[in-house]
Image (tube, rainbow, N blue to C red):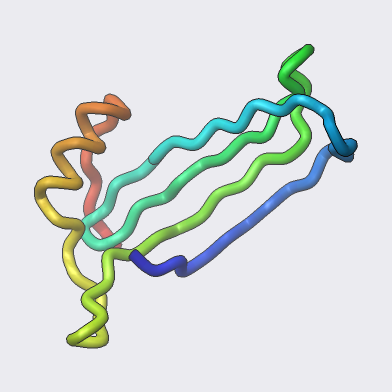
Length: 89
């Protein structure tokens, strides 16, 4: 995998020692890439400290180019996340 894009929105400060809850999920599964969504929340009241998204691309480092998301990954992600596959990378 290689990170192609990251977007972060900071909503509130986190103070040292404050309990947080972090969530991450794959929200879109394309032919060669995946969109991930992140949330950092206050563990006490659920208020949002930050949200983010990233696009990660399956990458063949020896060949120096993107590649299709491996079938084994695709199967596990679609089952775990309960999402439908989409193309158009």
